[in-house]
Length: 254
Length: 271
Ligand SMILES: Nc1ncnc2c1ncn2[C@@H]1O[C@H](COP(=O)(O)OP(=O)(O)OP(=O)(O)O)[C@@H](O)[C@H]1O
Ligand SMILES: [Mg+2]
Image 1 (tube, each protein chain N blue to C red):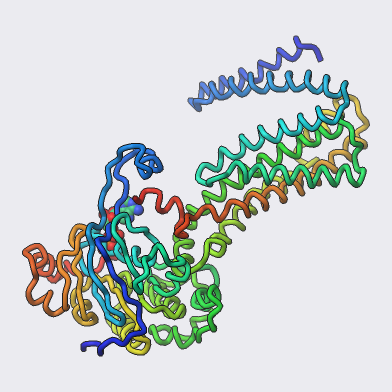
Image 2: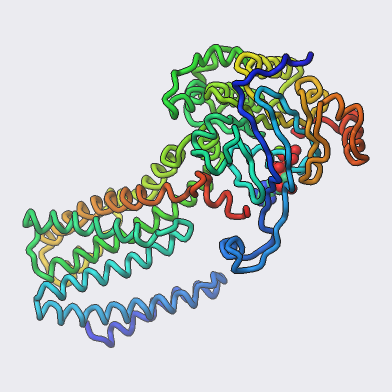
């Protein structure tokens, strides 16, 4: 595809912006920024990947993965403002997820250990883990607010934070996994996943493309579960302070 | 009926210049708390002094919004004192392990919340948390004037008055040394009020437990308490033997409150 053809796709952004203006959604700025960022980021990544694949060296691959990991951690932990130390908890969660899933894929020789496989698959794993971690932190706080009376009741009965927060943890982990599970359930029926679509458009055999897609989807399910559990377990007791009070319950106290 | 004299198994609760404040208006709460940024405070309670003896029953009365619930929440560390100290059994509340303090000092909230599960699950919640022997839920329910058969009902379908009584039974099940009661009879009819009062006083008699009882009902306060504290605008405006406080209020403001709240239609509990 030529750059000129690509330029035409700006028309799609314009459609979205017109709708935004017309319905006063106030999203024009966000749309423009996201379109520009998306285009620039992907183009840059494309050239970097070209170089890295050409060099085919492990240090560069590792560096790329670390970079993805950092950006993902930075992005997801913004959702956890009320959770102290959210960034290192997210870093552990996404890191562990990448190590376990990528370790299994490579260790069991499911995919070959070359940058062409490791980098894109890591990208999908880390990207999905980022979304799940952000969602989890968000749900954790929202659930705690929604259940504050119940949590306070547990505390008054003498429950420790681990006990009083258990219900919130469970609800948040569930909520953060549901999108991944639902999209896995309907794959192929509602939407053809991006990677498969890309491969097919690029001329790959659909059957091959499907096999890789199944592999990815299963990996992403595991990745979502590991991220949600890790970040959840590390974070849920920090909804409470040292006096075992709900943090946001007392944030106005002095 | 005056409750008989207390024995020594209840908790002693002592307030030493205790206060509770919230940040008023906007501002970065963390910064104001750390003193990096100025911010004004609103004092909900100021300079509270006083001692509740083990086994005593103290009635806490005062107009709506005067700080009665806040006072109770300082005793089990659901709120941290913003000034001064609160001692339970002569240990500062912040030095207690919070869960142990809250097991010993039980609280029945103004608007009780039922935990998921059956009524029995609610009553057994605290004993399970603390590894205590499970109580006889049916007997506890009967004690607070409910049918024993209610134990197996789901707790979320209960009426306001039923919830209040289950919450009381749930608090008694944690074998506390003190009970913090916040308007525990506000949703009950006359019969229910009598049963619940009797259950609380019987508990106090049997265990020697301490009671801090917030109520809007001044007649109830006189009926059940040894000592009465009157809270006006965040300060303890009167404190002493119940009959003395009612017979000779120490100030005009207290007298006006006691007279006003006793007028028909004014001393009623808010729904
Ligand atoms: N977390 C909080 N933030 C801000 N204000 C609060 C907070 N908690 C309580 N208040 C305020 O503190 C005051 C005292 O509240 P409290 O609940 O102790 O009153 P009360 O005497 O129990 O009233 P009532 O009889 O209506 O239950 C009220 O003005 C209330 O609005
Ligand atoms: Mg109150």
